[in-house]
Figure (cartoon, rainbow, N blue to C red):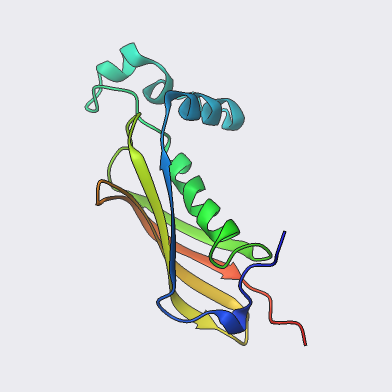
Length: 141
């Protein structure tokens, strides 16, 4: 696999995104992998009694889509994920297409740190917002 962006290749305002339609299988698999078996995610009868009226995806499933963008696109392969802050604003339902997007907000060349705004959207509505800090390699000399 090729190396992603080097620090010297990055600039403020650069963006990237990834789209994924969320399926019941995605939610079931995420629960199995993480051990988060909260019935709001897995039990249709339980979920029907909640404010959402149906199963919802784990918030961190959307967070994982942010990780996809950071680790594979911007900054991409070779970067190190140091920090993430999330605020979950709305649920993601089975069948929703989530767009995970990132935008470079700050570049600290001395410390090799890049801060990015992170968001997940469904039909243009922000469902998850936050920020990430990545360590990015300098270009080899």
